[in-house]
Amino acid sequence: MLPPLLAKPVDLAPLWLVERVARTLFSGVLKAHPELFERLGDYRRTRYGFSPVDLPLHFTVVPAMKALTVSRGAAPPVDARIEGPLVLLLGLLEGRCDADALFFSRDLSVTGDMEAMLALRNALDDSAIDLPRELGALAGPLSPLIAGTARYIRGKALEGRDATWN
Amino acid sequence: MELICPAGTPAAFREAVEAGADAVYCGFRDETNARNFPGLNFSREELRQSIVLARRKKVQIFVALNTFMRAGDEALWYSAADDAVAMGADALILADFGLMAYVAEKFPQQRLHVSVQASASNPEAIRFLVEAFGAKRVVLPRVLTVQDIARLTRQIDCEVEVFAFGGLCVMAEGRCSLSSYATGKSPNMNGVCSPASHVRYRQDGADLVSELGAYTINRFGPGEASGYPTLCKGRFEIGDVEGYAFEDPVSLDVIDEIDALRAAGVSALKIEGRQRGKAYVAEVVSSLKKALVASPGERAALVARLRAMSEGQRTTTGAYDKRWR
Image (cartoon, rainbow over all chains, first blue to last red):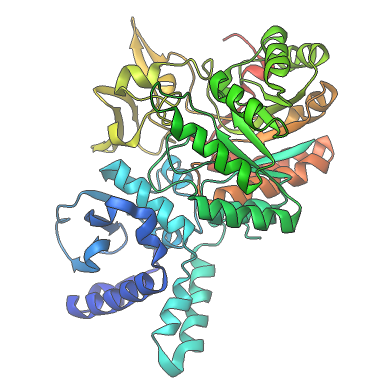
């Protein structure tokens, strides 16, 4: 679960600010990984929901529209939704965790269109997304500092949960 | 023994190669392979690039064309075989006799492996496939004991590959119709067992309920490890008893039997899991590679971590060490 030290600021931050940061990152990832769309096929038009269980936020994404919205309160209607701790959702985004294993351990739950969810999982898994690198790319002269800090946090958060990389 | 490793995407392919695979098996993005899931598998160009990488790393690449040809649509399977051969696949893994005949006649030099989907599990069937199509290797179904395998290898003139780790299909492979019964689609004809299009998960209080088509497959209590929504691993009420009719949600692990399988004449160990992510492939391949050269006492520790990644978070030796319950 996300440590309170990190969760609290996100909880208190205005929605527009969270959305702006998330949209910028999302847009950067899509631009850097156009192969995602090819593997998603028709499911690029799917409305995907991501609900971190340790944050009072819901992220709704439609890849084809390059659209991302953030909301609080009740989860908005989507075609397929995945719920779990934020660090594991981010670990999945980077392909650092195995989705089936997290499903077996009940760390993740999925609802809605399972074909769409599988397509997304496989498309993400094949893309070498590196969130610290993507974050760093947005930080201009602070790039090394931001990327390094993000890598450190990721390492700590996923300790023992990610695979032994080759 | 060779270690034959799965790859559902080029990223997983690279992980398998780096982790020490002797050979990687994969398939095209269509109904010609038995892992035809959305977003999975290789385009022609991706396979071409993967073969280049495999050559550089001295790793073999096997292409699975292991579904059964649909009458009238044979061209899809023929062109997949043509392309895989042209690209330089080290072996084609085939299940359909018609496709075996096509490959044997058109590409007599092409190495041909009999897929587990062909369900060839007795000396007569395997000898026929060797004589008729020049099959060089047979992948045995997961329904035989180690003793059965030892008896079999002595009576046939081709290499034997067996599953060592991963998803456990408990039925006679290539002949199981449970998925068809519930959804109209099967791994044999469409490349999908329990297709995602027919799967639904829902939370019922703290319980997770899995459904396949019109059937409730399982209800997992709070904290209970879950499994795939397949009929063969469903929990049902039978008379007054509630339980697993065929098999529990569990994965195969026969690492403890490595020495016995080697003594039985097995040439290659196969890891199941083309539908799994690259993190799984990296972890399982590197662990099994180490286990192959470790002493029997060291093997348990090497693969213990893999149990958490397995269906139901449990493993079994399945039919390899058959005991009646």
